[in-house]
Amino acid sequence: VVVAPAVPEPPKPVVVAPAVPEPPKPVVVAPAVPEPPKPVVLAPAVPEPPKPVVLAPAVPEPPKPVVLAPAVPEPPKPVAVAAAVPEPPKPVVLTPAVPEPPKPVVVRHDQEFAAALALFRQSNLSAAAQAFQAFVTAWPGDPAAPEALYHLGEARMALGDPGLARDAFQKLADQYPKAAQTGPGLVMLGIAENRLGRHDAACAAFDPLRGPLLGVVLPSWAAQRLAAEREAAGCP
Image (cartoon, rainbow, N blue to C red):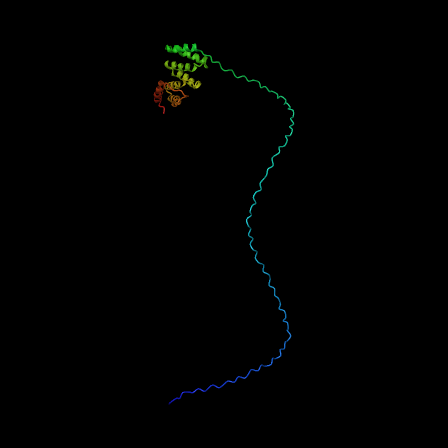
């Protein structure tokens, strides 16, 4: 089959007629009808939160200078001096003087003591014992009385009478505890008690001599006799 090519047709001419305007249509204006007012709805007012108040720090004012006016001294007030009224004299009360008791007068009997001591040193023991006994009986306040009692006890011991010797030494310890002869006298008292077989009494006489007796230091012979007699009496 042989297909012949298509031959286009020539375009036809376009005839444009002139546009005829339409006449204007009349405009009818209707009267405006007002719309009814819309109701106004008021929302409750919401208060705004208070704003924080920021206080600025107070700035102190500088102190004002103080001007001191010079002090004006007041004139001295007159002083009224009242006349001194003398006080009436106070009555003087005199208390009666109390006289001090008279001090005892120490009368020494040195000659009588010396005579008795001389008999003792001459080994006249019986006469010496009588003389010392008479001395301490007549003058117990004489400063030589403690020594007279001590020698009286020694004389009685030498005469073989430990009972009378014990009485003399015991009286020495009782009446003159601070005398210098009291320490040795206690030793002799214990010896006399031992001679009488009163060993417990001997130990009782020795007991105060365990320590210092009134500050009196025993002579060496008395200390030696004390140790031997304590052992003989069986003192603890």
